[in-house]
Amino acid sequence: MPYWNGSPIGNDYAVNQLGVSLLQIKKRMFETTSRAIDDLFPEQALVVHLRALRAIIELFPKESLHVSFTVDDLNSAEALFRQWYLKVGKRIPAKYRTQVQRDAEAEFRAFRLLFGIDEPRTDGKDP
Image 1 (spheres, rainbow, N blue to C red):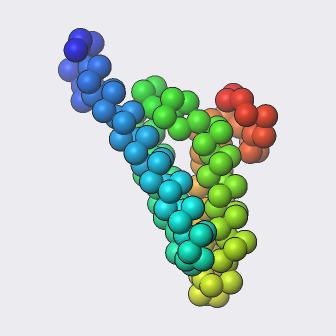
Image 2 (cartoon, rainbow, N blue to C red):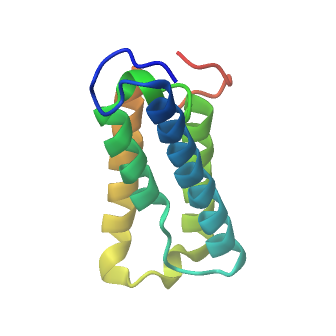
Image 3 (cartoon, rainbow, N blue to C red):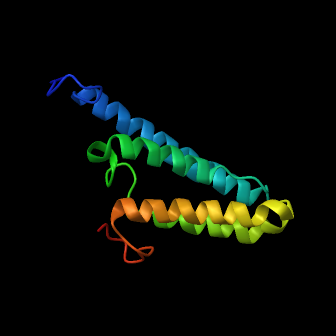
């Protein structure tokens, strides 16, 4: 396992483990949100998973962006959130509905900025 510098991410093993962690977070995000849709559960963890992914990606952009989380993943997450919201939105306490939707939209925008795109991509290609 070669080292190229002494930083926390300065060796092959660290980069590989970072990728594994990002993939696990992404997998859980999609699984738990799909389960929330199936069970008509008015709570979801998609947005918090996105925030965790973005925090890691912002710390280690070169090692993680476009590899462990892609534009296609973002588009899928956004579509899944919208599906969940349409299906169970009325079950969210009324005083929180707008905030839940607003926070999700803000997170999607933040990812689009990281990817350098303005709107959701629908052609399946990364920028």
